[in-house]
Structure formats: structure tokens, C-alpha cells
Length: 194
Image 1 (cartoon, rainbow, N blue to C red):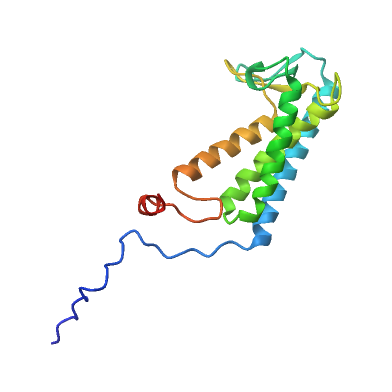
Image 2 (image 1 turned 90 degrees about the vertical axis):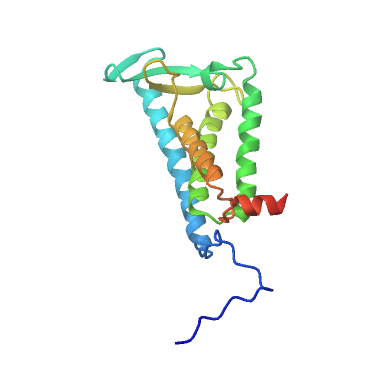
């Protein structure tokens, strides 16, 4: 019976947190998921708004699953919870900047979950940006169509839902230490980087 070789004292022990690197998803898959979700969120948002404006009168309320869900057609000149109703043009600029910033991040994209989050974010931002640009009262000052009403909550739309969903995913990815490029940030690597 031979003894197992003892580790060389001059070589550092491998970290217990070292995990094998997962291969990155193919770029075509990442971009397909990103653009697919962006288009889905945008088209779904615009089609529902088209249905609301074509079938409801502003201020009309239709019970769907009372008392939990109603369609309630309003036009919002401000942001969430009607904040900033007198500076609609500011939100137009912000949504345009956000959309451009998302597209600029695509070259770094290496995670399927980040592709999903950014796709939903872009689709939602473009959905509400379209309202700002092309709905009444004027170009870049348009009011956003909101129609989903839940009890004791703000009235919102599909674009808002896409944005909130993307923010939830981004927060979870950040908490788990998953970077945009798909790499995992651990406490050890965070200390090493600082």
C-alpha cells in the first residue's frame, strides 16, 4: 500500500469557490432572445393600447375579474404614479436615452437571463416612447395609454409590466453576482478587483 502524495507546500491550494466556467450561450441565441422579447413586449403593448383606444372611452371602467382586475382607460402625461405630469418631454428624452444605452450594451451580452431582461426593458421603453412621440396632444409630448387596474395600485399598461419584470430580473442577477457578460462575481473576486 502506498501513501497518497502530499500536496506540494509551495503550490497554493485551490479555492473552494472555484467553479468550472460554463460555456457562453451562442451569440445568435442571445440576440434572438433579446430581440424576440423586445419585439414581443412592444407589439403586445401596442396591440392592447390599440384595442383600448378603439373599444373604450377615456375614463371608462370594465370589470374583468372583479374586484381584482379592471380595465380602466386613462391617459397619463407623467411617469409612474403620475409623477411629473408637466414635464412630459423629459420622459421622452429619458426613454430615448435608455433605449440607446440598452442597444450599446449588446456587444457585452453573454448571459441568457440578461438577454431576457434587456429585451423586456427595451420593448417596454419603446412601447411607452411610441406613445410619447405619436399620441395626443403633440409630438414628443404624447400621453401614455394606461388601462390595467388592480386594487390599491397605480393604473399601468403592458409596457410598464415589461419594464418592471426586467428590473426584477436585473435585481436578481445582480444579487446573484451574474454580470452582463455572463461571468459570476463572488466575494473573493470582488475583493480582488477592489
